[in-house]
Image 1 (tube, one colour):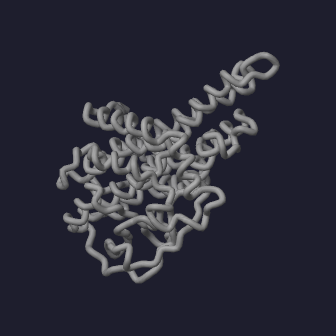
Image 2: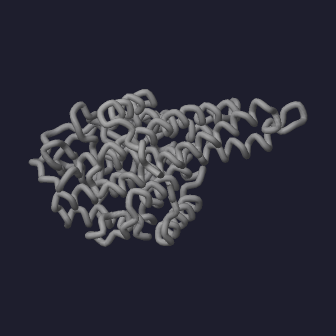
Image 3: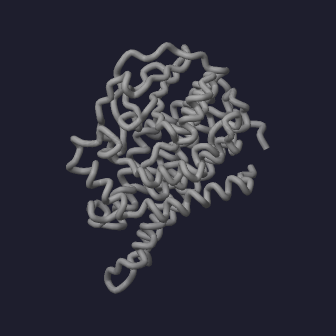
Amino acid sequence: MDFSVDDTTSELTALVRDMGERLVTDESLRELDARFGPGTESGGTDKDSARFHARFWDELVRAGVPAALAPERLGGAGLGVVGEALVLRELGRVLAPVPLSPAVRAAHLLDAAGAGERASAVAEGRQIAAVADGGPGASPEVDWAPIADVIVRPSADGLHVSDRTAVTVERTVPVDFSCAGLVTGEPEPASALAGPAAEFDALRRRVHLAAHQWGVIEAALQRTAAFATTRHQFGRPIGTFQAVAARLADGSIDVDAVRLSTLRAAYELDACAGAPGATAHAAVASAHFWACEAGHRLAHTAVHVHGGVGLDRSEPAHRYFLAAKANEFRLGGATRQLLDLGDVLAVHGDPWEFSA
């Protein structure tokens, strides 16, 4: 399968990478940890105290990144889910705490529900959006709810849109200290969604999470490999020891597995024209499995190779461990993804049996 992208997508991802590497530094993340991190869990109820990189977010909005990933009717560049995944990967590489994924998802959902003006406000960064999980048994915990201006809740009966002031948000503390909260209160009456938009959004969210995990573990592996060349034991870099080199090599294979499965899932969502079938569901479940499985392995490899430094809060390695574990938990764990994939195979058979 050809995963090459056009020049617009390449330029956008290069722009996000450049801004991220300049602005989301270890020092800036250390400052955010002091604001809302270990030992400060009672804070985080507004933009001034939440673990939110406001400067990077402002630069992303100013550069038009959320707008470029919005629906084409709102002026988006038509980069598809593949473009979104490549940008989310860049955010994962630097562990950027910014609400880009919910901005993209909310813009598409609001546009599908006919709320074009509000969708434009979200896509242009004039409002921050949080998007709740849809479907039965969904968790009331919503990422970015404490600092959101609008909370969007897709469901079987349509799209519920609430102003932040109309609901109650109780701050929670995810394992990576990211911004999230429990949302309670009566939802606004639902607006009709065009087609299977809620189903597509659920799959888009999972691809976004897998793409973010791809960036997290890719950067974690690079940092760990670099550390293994400078840390010496018995007069040699530890990276020359067979056991360490083998774990790093296995990590490289894991990163490739997440990369390929995530891009395949994004490709299938773009190809399904908004009506996901068995192929899209199977691809997303496969990407989710690899993101969970590889994320778990690489998080522990990074800590083990770093030794005690890997869990030292004054060093950056621990943030990658926390981010990888948080993504694993958000994705539902590897076993859950295999069960989902098994359901698809049991009902529809192998969706790729006759694929080229």
